[in-house]
Image (cartoon, rainbow, N blue to C red):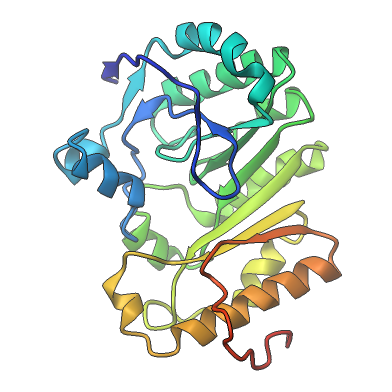
Length: 263
């Protein structure tokens, strides 16, 4: 695996449900084609030249060294640190990234800092041995493998993600799921209830729409569609005592909701 060196690592994120974050790799082997906002930004600012370069990630080999210096500087301001918003901490085929992710979490935990993670890979069983304050999550926008093969071509199968999450849950670890970016019916017809039921054991669900996709704009009922699913998520989580967060602009203001709480 190729490597890079970073000048800094910890930074305050602009993501609405985030605090501080770490991205200790450049690129992501999963090659998502929603399209991927992280890839679009990396290409726009010249960090990578092509999709092919993006899916051959490079690890920041000095990440732990930087972290040693930055933790004392930011510690009093940090509520939690998220791994990762512009790469994947447990991407398939790159054990070096997963191993470094675990070491980063351990180092942050040692100083009393909580970590959250999100992956389209497989959550390592070893995470169950870490501090119980942490929260580990997966992205899950479908249960249809043909959709994954088209839009998340090199990510782990959905059932494997769910099983790794369930293992951690059964070990008493806090778990969560990001159902974002959720596709509209003109991309794929699917039963949203089945997705919710497959992750009924989690502690938190985040739901959000798909953006930056021309096909979505062609779906005339997209506002009503996302409104209904957002309120269905709220209802499901309320009934099952699950925390939830609906991403900004997913619910459209002043938009009538029809059958939003129906099963």
